[in-house]
Structures are given as C-alpha cells and as structure tokens.
Amino acid sequence: MTHTSALAPTVSLFPLNAADHVAALQAVYEATPSYWQMYHLPATPDDQAARDLAAMAETPGRNLLGIVRRIDEADPAAGVEMVGVVDFRLHWPDPNLVYLGMIMVAEPYQRQGIGRAAWRVLVPWLAQSAQMTTARAGIEQFNPGGLQFLQQAGFVLNGETARVQSGKRWVRLLYMDYDLKREAT
Image 1 (cartoon, one colour):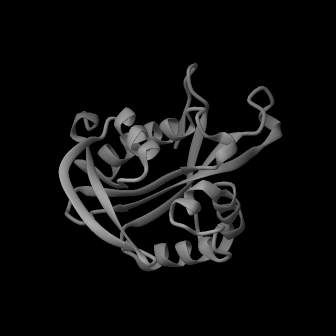
Image 2 (tube, one colour; image 1 turned 135 degrees about the vertical axis):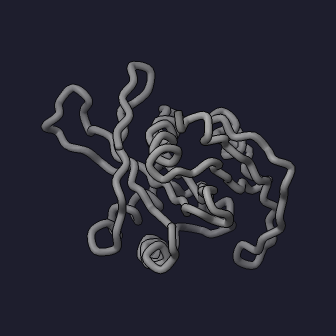
C-alpha cells in the first residue's frame, strides 16, 4: 500500500513479522521517547517490539504495519526507512469494526504529514478489501496531540469512555469513530 500526493510525503505500509522486523520496530519505539514518558516509563522497554510482534501473531485479526518513506525522494535508488508503525485489529470488538490501537511516527519525522499519509493509505484497504464499516480508536484523555491528530484525520468522539489500567496507573480512554462506509464506494 502506497500514498503519493504533492502536499504530503510518500509513504508505504507493509506487514511486520517477528522473524524480520524486531530491530526496525524497536528502533521506531526508541525514537519516540515521549510516548513512553506519557506512561511514566523512563525509556522504551528493551523487548517491547518482540513482545508486540509475538502478541500480534497470537491475536486474531491483529496487524502491525511498518510505515516507510524514501530516504531521498529525488533518488529512488537511495532506499527506504521505517519511520513508524500502525497497530490495528480487524473485527474487534465487533464484526465489521476495526480497532486502531496506534499510529506512531518516530519523533524526528512527526509533524510532517507521515501519520496522516499512512492513515490515507490504510483507509481504502480497510473499507474495500477488509470490508470494515467503522474504525474505532481509544485515546488517552491526557494525550491532546493524539486527540487532535485523530480529529484532523476525520474521527469523531462517540461519547463512550472507559477506565483502563496501564501499568500501575488507571487512565481514561475517550473513544472515537471513523465512518469507513463512505470510503467503500
């Protein structure tokens, strides 16, 4: 899956697996220290990528996709680099609903349109190929940047909230929905 636009960076998404992508995913996590600090962790846990990829393999419908971009847009031979990850689960918690766990872009690449471009790549696939009708995301109430990102991507608060435990802390999730039915045509 690839997105190209004159106004946004060109990004592609590809499926991650534990055999080939632990180091690249761990590098993205380590390049995003503010995410872990939000959860009062001093740094990325050393084995986070391996644990997430193992959990993905054991969880029906869960997918981790790497977000890649060209190292040099003007030189196709320069190669690509993984700068982010999209984590989602199909048909959960309801049929035809996809739960978006995370769109993470490494901090050096944030605020460049990469997360929005990745979402625009994923939306048609979710609506048409995976035949999902709604995308849902739960955003922590203390993550205003994440809330703003989802709102700008077209998600709307649906009025549902939940308290969930994150380590030793409890956090409130605000749930947001994106209508994928409009993308299916």
